[in-house]
Length: 344
Ligand code: AMP
Ligand code: MG
Image (cartoon, rainbow, N blue to C red; front, side, top):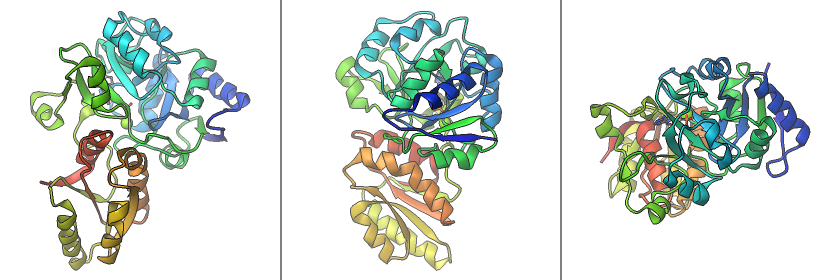
């Protein structure tokens, strides 16, 4: 039985927080809202509890987890050393959607890090996540609260759909405000390198650190990945997603759409607000992501859109690229991974 507790997103009810914190202290699993997506939490220092995460998600054990902390002061509980760059980044971006890769200490079970000597850590800003972390007073390992390979949950109903009966508690605090996962940054290399684009834009990190690299997932797939969670096929809806990266994406999508319709297939489009009517006219089901310039809004609605179109049982989902600025890079990364076909 999974208990769902509706909780206020800004002023979480203490009795719900206490109940969830107790469950974590006893080695149970709690799904909770963060500003990125919903997380599935367990005591990071309890190997048995951590194993339950992998079982509930059906996640392969070689995919490492992110540890969530209530504040930067908790870093020594899980890290062997805290480089100066980490302090600098923490001051600027924590609490928030930035994950840092740091050397692990001996208290962190290898189950969390998939055998690596490094650990991924972040301090989330969501008031429910903050209250929970403070109340249980433990580092909490928390991947996204979905079955492995599915789209990350941005609503508690998404979590219920994937994990009902497999976890102890869901704290339902409404929609996740950012909607894509955190930016994962490796600062052990020079320049630092983004392993996964996410909620903190590249530009914001570069303003502090100077030029940084972005891991090319395609190239890395050939050279061997630094961590298996960066696998190409991930974050995917059930329908066949076709991603348009070309300049004339809108026109190409309309052509593709009519081809699919002619074959008797139903088509959904994850569409920019202003482009949706043209796709609807051409016979597609359009999910409005937001204004094409508003990458924050698009990121926020992206996963919900994939899940919604899946529920409408469309055969194909079309979506175009929205550039690299702001959250554009993270959106592109997720769409590329979700796609069965990329059209250049
Ligand atoms: P998730 O919790 O589902 O958002 O996924 C966490 C992701 O963080 C993993 O899939 C990896 O891509 C990345 N990650 C976690 N730990 C490490 C690590 N020690 N080194 C590099 N990447 C990591
Ligand atoms: Mg995930």
